[in-house]
Image (cartoon, rainbow, N blue to C red):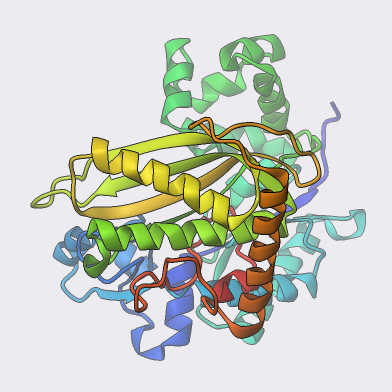
Length: 426
């Protein structure tokens, strides 16, 4: 490997994104400690916290009742996820004015590969300043970002995390060892508690020790070729990204107090599955597995118990059949799960295959699905998709709208998946 690898990647990480969008939308809460919550109840957890709130020790995942105890002047707002997606697209467009976006990594992170005429230290410093100024001027003054620049995408992401908020960190080849040695193993994206325990079991407890491994040792420590890949990435090599493919489609929802009874929670769950089914068809996929997960409300601040199970499917993509499978799972949950009030529900469609790659099979119950009946159900589902797209969410439903009880506020955002705008109207 050469002595000096060029700066190839710029990574932009928006600071406290959801909370910053809320402050941008409401000038009255700018400069104040703000927490974004999924629903208006103390028993749920923060999904975002402004830097003013973080100064009080409040983080993503902090219980709302605990956050209130930490900061008496805390402002709590319910998430407006369609706004976060709208701002996301505006930010992408603004970044594209300065440098092409190579990868949208999450709702609040993008990666840009740099060309030879724009990757000098002076050049990337000026480029980062232009991007930050453009976002402030053309998207919102509250939307700050931290930018990392490095020889590869992993190191650029790690660099972006080194200085927050509103930072710029440039990692050149000659300083990688000294700068990385000061970090914790958990600062490497993808190294969580389980991986830390695995590394500790073989004596790797510091970044300095990890960086000292040779290729063979790294592979043995990791237990796979991923160790070899990590070795070269931490040395600065610009390796090609490993392609990934979505393996599941799902939705979950934290229930407000009025929706936690089992009957109403069931309606919400049916609606979540109907939304997932629409996404399934839009992706031209079929599903061979349906999963249901619930979390109980708990008592007096105690954590609620959890229950989850799945059922095999004969590669379905129509809403009618999927809802029928859900009813079987729901009945099983009611029989096995003692809690009668639920805090959260979620559904997942797994074992995805292309829509035209059909393999006949059975439900777990042994029920077969006649080809003609399946075609009729699919045609009905596609017709519902068209009507709902034209006339709005829940213009046509299949038994999951009890006087609005099961209506949600649009899709919730997993940070690694940006919903399409169409999903907010389904």
